[in-house]
Image (cartoon, rainbow, N blue to C red; front, top):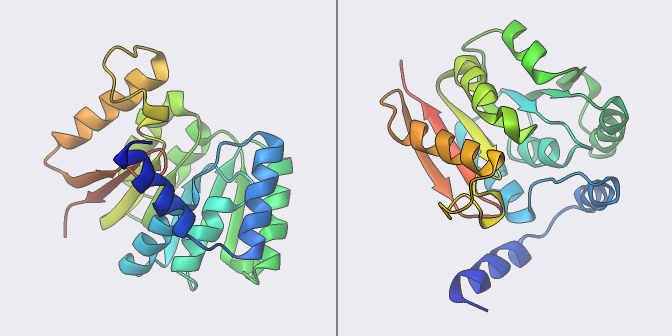
Length: 210
């Protein structure tokens, strides 16, 4: 095992998740949902806490893993979450209820994010979390930056896509899309950004402005 692999494993194993979050993660595996890793979830919780988030929007509800992580860091926040799978969202609502997140703090929208996001109010969210169709990630991030408040943050997991993005020989559509996104964000003067290698990679984008 390389030093990098050992560091990655140590970081993941260090995270202690709640019983409800562990159950949600197990159900994700059962349903074939590629959710964020424990260490990625912990980092998202830290970001939500540091930002003092009051309004969070999430693209990709799954069964609630990422939502639980974000709300763990911002226990007073309101979460709006979008997903195409109503059955997954029903599981997510159960997990939020079990975690004692009041129903009036969670708004679940069933639909395609490409149709829903244009209807959401711009400059309205402290944290935008994008974890849905990777083939549409550039479009979703563009919407996310519009929806984020000035000094708000957009979080994009899986940006290293199973180690493929760092390898220029990997030319599949998903790896190329993430590579393009990272290149465009890194050269933008409208944001400050960083990529953490935690999990499968976590892109963190802060929208500049007053």
